[in-house]
Image 1 (cartoon, one colour):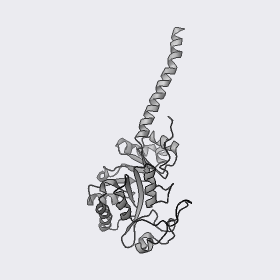
Image 2 (cartoon, one colour; image 1 turned 135 degrees about the horizontal axis):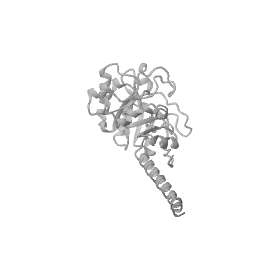
Image 3 (tube, one colour; image 1 turned 180 degrees about the vertical axis):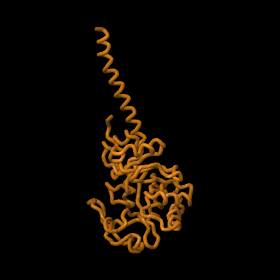
Image 4 (tube, one colour; image 1 turned 90 degrees about the vertical axis):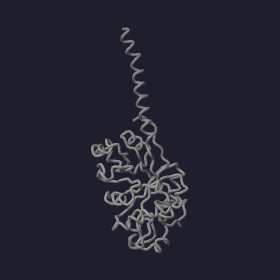
Length: 269
């Protein structure tokens, strides 16, 4: 009878200890999770704009990501799409339009409380402000380099503004990243991919490998080599506090989100 009593009394204590351990490790996983604000802060302000970056900062993001493309006359601008139609009142491909045309365009958006006169920023203008801002910037290069001269152009914009330590160059194109790294060994780089695998040996020092968040659950064996190599795994695009918590428990180190204002939901599951 006494042994049964000890068992009955001891069992809740064991359960409580286990729950405390789970909660402790859950907190540790969450505390090491970085929030990366997507396209400035696309869920709170027009994407790829100076206002978006400032909105990310106001919501305590320490890293924000923007997309860049090159105009016909060699100006690097913030723009995700190949064509201007979705995000501006212009038309045609970015690569076919000169900066003089694009600078007059207005950014399309659905935010009722935000002005409809926002313009497309150049990368140079964004980096000028970055010097005094408390945030790192991921520059995701869209498209590809036709030659090394184009790669040197974008490196020169960063060098001119003396913000190399605050910038991470990123791309889905490993060859593009290799070219950038060959031209300047001191830059930081990150790799996005739809087909997770360890980066090529030349890119082993990447700051992160970014994948679609669903990959972590549907094909975990694909991301395992990245985790085993101790390469920070980042995922896009996560706008749910509950999902952020679940991903943190799967070894994810960075959450790319349109909503930097949404915190990880508390809980152990």
